[in-house]
Image (cartoon, rainbow, N blue to C red; front, side):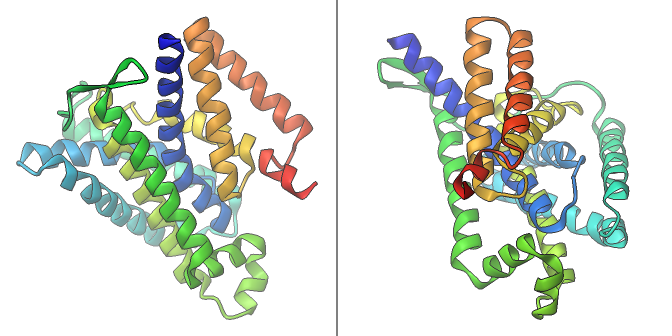
Length: 285
């Protein structure tokens, strides 16, 4: 029973991290129809923001919002310099964000080097939970993921900005005809989506090695979570994260991480085959 609770907490932790990454992805794709292949590199920038800020004496809890703002500004710059010219060419946005990801990763290698670095965790003492000694900081990560998801949903479903965003998700052309400034909305969306990726990287920095490849391990599971949950559906990000995160953790514990990846891919294929709209599409049936 103790091992079960420990495994359940690990699954919840990984699911929370995936949700943090997915929220930014699903917001960008839902509103802009842009498949952001540079999302992992925005995650990476968030982690390196914490590394640099801690190096000059900034407390960790100030580094997290700083990472959100910093990477959000980088996303705003990328949108203004590249993406705004190719919104209506989806294939070009894939190539552009892929090239952007390579450029960011190489810039990190040039500035910081290819070696792994560590960020000091703000909390190190374990806590007893259900008879399990569990990392207190991992519990904080779970709480942050829940609060961020709640904040995004409150903005989407309880504000006028969220109403405009959901109108754009449903029909961009009609939203524009109704007077919604799509250029401003797209700019804000990409900046916030990038900032959320940076926030994810900042939160995860103390739990993993900070290196130029760290974002790649989260982007693929995040995309799978969105496909399973439902493309363009904010609620789908939650369902997909739960399915992919929990199945990966459980199968890895019982077999091996390699088998876990195979099982997760098969699960995603089966889900997409029988539910093309994802798990969130079940509500419409």
